[in-house]
Amino acid sequence: MPSPIDCSKVRFAISAVREAAQLVRRVQSEMVVGTLAKGALAKDDHSPVTVADFAAQAIVGKRLSESFPGMGFVGEESADALRTRECQTTLEQITHFVRQLEPKATAEQVCEWIDRGAGEPTDEFWTLDPVDGTKGFLRGDQYAVALGYIREGVVRVGALACPELNDQDLGYQDSVYQDSAGASRPDCGGAGTLLVARRGDGTWAGSLDEANTEWRQLDVSDRAASADARLLCSVEKAHTDTGGIGLLVKTLEITADPVPMDSQAKYAVLASGGGDVNLRLISPRMPNYRERIWDQAAGSIVVEEAGGRVSDLDGKPLDFSHGRTLATNRGVLATNGHLHNALLAGLREINA
Ligand code: AMP
Ligand code: MG
Image 1 (spheres, helix red, strand yellow):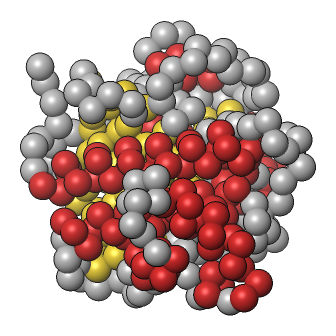
Image 2 (cartoon, rainbow, N blue to C red):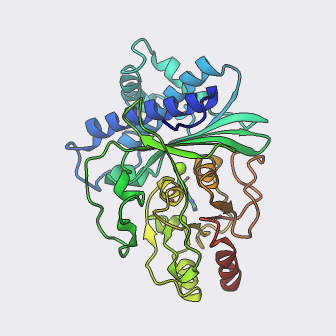
């Protein structure tokens, strides 16, 4: 049976995102589903997304200290706030969930494991987004646990656990994402998808639930006519420039409406041929925003190793050697490769 290359970093990435995603799912089922009305949650100290974020980063920090002691780790979260008196209940909730995997964990250890990820990037490190697409997580839509391994400013290994992403989303069947924006996703009760890529060895997808999953190698689509391009973009309007996307669609005479989706699940769909372009235009409200490395590391290698191309909006390669952000890049353009130059030309034309 074909499978991704068997090396310690790939093995680690697969098992870390799988374990973290299972923990996040448990938080979701105990704290979101059935207890609170849909849409009524905010990202405050007691919200499930906070608990899920910290619990997932704690468990990956712990696993890293076992498997790669001494190696750098850059995670989205820091435990500073959790150590304050006001956050004691939240810390107790996080510790409760972490103990399901590490029964002897203390609250102080949980903070230490989280804070393994609080440092600055070094020459060689792992980077984690414990729950990418937090709004999607709360809505019951797409979200991802994203882990990347970076050396000398280049992503070498990436893994994405996408608990809500299943075959029908990935383009194996007629993609539902050819429908107009907002079309509902059929719920087939799937197990979710795990994707892993290593530089030079392709991108692989399997079941998130099964440890002995059947792996399949992914290929991007071969669409080359820009009018036929299926665009993916953020659901959150504050994370992009919806006006710019509209202008680009018009300029390139793209016929299908862009499909909004949360998180790096967009990269998974692109890598498997269910979409052709993922656009991260810069929000006019935050013109100086620079992408966070954990939001792009795993997703970018997953697309590149499936045959796609990833750059910033000016066509420059993403450079992961400038700290916690992609400080020298503006936005992100990820495509199946065939459409990249046409999209870059369109972006120049609209001055995005
Ligand atoms: P998405 O689900 O594609 O909207 O991406 C979610 C990620 O967008 C989050 O993890 C945030 O780190 C990131 N984000 C937050 N603010 C912005 C912004 N102004 N522009 C682009 N991305 C942002
Ligand atoms: Mg994120």
